[in-house]
Length: 130
Image (cartoon, rainbow, N blue to C red; front, top):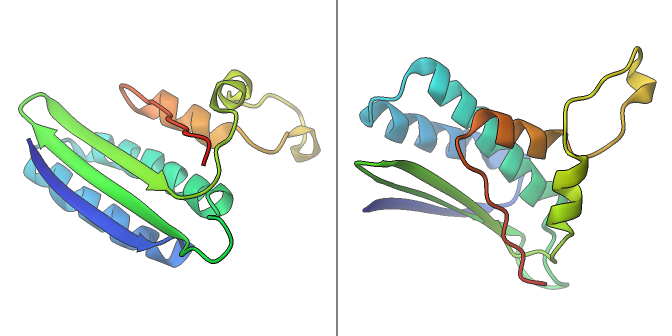
C-alpha cells in the first residue's frame, strides 16, 4: 500500500492544500472528474469538522493529520484531529438531507456527515474519548 500524509494546521486556509493533494493522487489513479469532485467535497467536509469541532486540549496545537493510502483496490482517505470525542452514532442518526420551505427551518449540524456518506463508498468515524 502506498501512502502520502499531511500534518497541517487545522485552518480553513489549508483546505486548498488537502484538495490539491487529493486531486493529484486521484488523477494518477485514474479516477473520473466526477469522482474526484465528490471526493473533494467529502474530504472538505471531514476537514471542516476537524477545524470547527476538533479543538485540542488547552495548549496543544490545533492540527489535522490527513492520510491518503491506496493500492489496486482503491483509495482510502483519513482525516484525524486531536480534539475531544463526540457522539458519532448520535450525529449519524440525525445526519441527512434537509427538507423545508425556508432556510429558517434548517437545523445546524449533520449535513456534512450526510454528504460524506452520500458521496463515498464507505465512511467510518472513530472516536477515542480524547
